[in-house]
Image 1: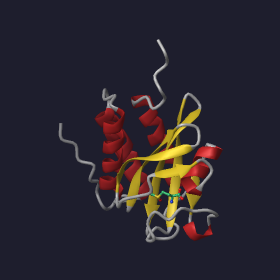
Image 2: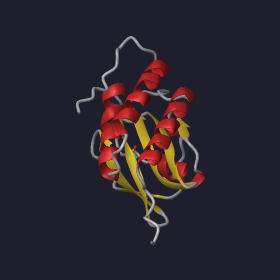
Image 3: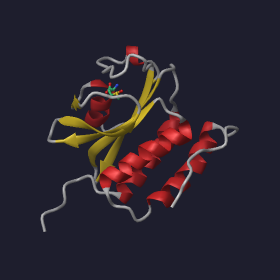
Length: 169
Ligand code: SME
C-alpha cells in the first residue's frame, strides 16, 4: 500500500490537519506494532507539515522518558519526569505550547536551532505513556490549532497501539 502524505501547499494549517487525520487513520487501521506505528506517524507528520523535528519520547520506569521513533537530527536519549518541556507535559499530563523555548524554565536544548515547541502527552487508560514532541527553528510556530489536532492524533495512536505493559493473563 502506497500512501502519500504530501498535501497541497495552498491549504491553511487547519485544512492540512483536517485532510491529514483521516488519511492517517486509514493508514494505521489494523496495525498493532507499536514501534512501526510511531515511526510511520513521525514520518507522515514530517512529510505533511515539514516539521524540523517531530517524534516521540516514551515512559520507561517511573521517572524517565526515553527517545522513541522520530524524524530530524539526533536527540537526547533520556528526559526525567518534570524536566524540560517533555518532562513537564508528562508531570502535568497537559499539552505544553512554548512560543519561545528560551523563556521556558528548564528547557532542554537537544538542538540549538530549536526556537519554539509543542509537546502533547499520550494518554492510555488515563496514564501518560509517552509524549509527541515537535520543534521549530522559528518562534511562535504552534498554537491552539496544533494543540487541538495533535491531541486528536495522540488519541488515534492509543486507539491503534498499546503502549502500556500487557496485563498479566
Ligand atoms: N526540548 C525538549 C527536549 C527534546 S528535544 O526538543 C527533541 C524538552 O525541553 O523537553
